[in-house]
Image (cartoon, rainbow, N blue to C red; front, side):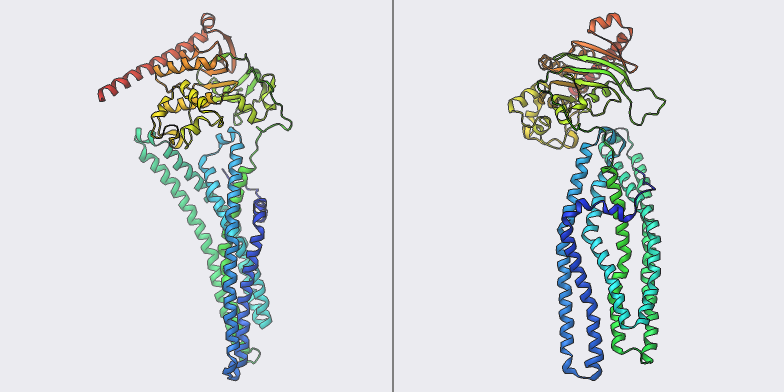
Length: 605
């Protein structure tokens, strides 16, 4: 995603983190106090040295040396203790803030509509959930504490320098002005580069994820080197941006190192001149340069603390791009409930177009009128791209209609909470996605409290008895996205998941496409028991699937142009006959491929 050129300033952007950081602020403040005490203690040591040089050492009284030495030792120990307290106070809060922000981000991603995920690359979301929040944690635990404390330390140090000798103090203050000017210019340049770097890192994460998920395709087509070339090009772009960042940081470091050294040189000349004229004692000269030495780290640290702050500002902007994403698919303020669900599903003049569709394009669904009676099975057929899958996605509000309404038992689905709606309507998709969890958890995803008997029945209906032969049976963990299973096995588990939810309405988006002919026949036979009492809408890509339906709806040009029994539509609709003929050709091709595969397996055996 591109950066917003009109985004807020650094302070305003980072301040938005405060609701998550608020519980951690007491410890952060204590960490700042501890660090500030340590800094002030360090600034007091030169004052003790001043008294030591101008007192006992100047008089040659060795008996009076021990008290200043003891004071320096005590102050050094106190400084070390305060630094330890600073680390102890700030260590835990940052991790808690990071955890809470990551949970909020994940919750938002779960709540955002499918249309959001259609537009966003998964790598960009992953980089925001991991690397960006890690930057924010480090800044809260380390950056903000040192930035505030070091700025205060520098100001207090300037006061000490002016109190020792106002002429040398003014030299030091005036020479520091270029640092603040360059720091302002640094922000303008670095913020843009930092944003580009983090976006490119997200794109690179997307490339890795896509290549890992598509490794079978890349290997099958011998395109590994092509993918590597594209990845290397993206990596080189990121490398170039990181070098640009490094150059920007190197520029400010040049000033942060050069200016203090020049200042030290000028102060030394001035100090020697003042000491020779009797306007400055040896103790004051020692104290001045000891104080300036103490200030050296706070001054030099401003560079990396500023770069960390600007990185954090960019990370916060990227985080809130997701948190601020509009979500039109939300629960109603005053939701309705269905007391006695029956499963009557009605489409009334339904229109739909995707959010990014050009204005000149027609609606994908252009006035759908369709009614499914309780317990009825309706097959949806149409040519590829006619909107069948989109129609099924509207039933559970994966997308919202852009016109008209969908009603479940007389209630507009938008008047129900999403939880209740999806309890009444369950879906099985052609692209069967499983999670890195046990078979049991995957099948009972929509109904975790289902009994073992319900689980067994769902597996039986889906012809998924193979799970009992897995190493740990129902407790076997399937791999990422279920890739350790075959396509047909994944589809059967996805179908079992929909059946186990025990919904009033079952929506099946061609869930049998990866099954062989024999298995499909057994699944269809078992499904008839479920469909006898459940309202079902099935997207059919095979004539055999059409046979499961009581009625068939023909989708053509974004409209339902015919509804009736299969035999009646064959007799009355030329377009229906054409669609069914194309489905039969596809089924014959799949059958031939299945036979060839069986022959190859027999030959191998």
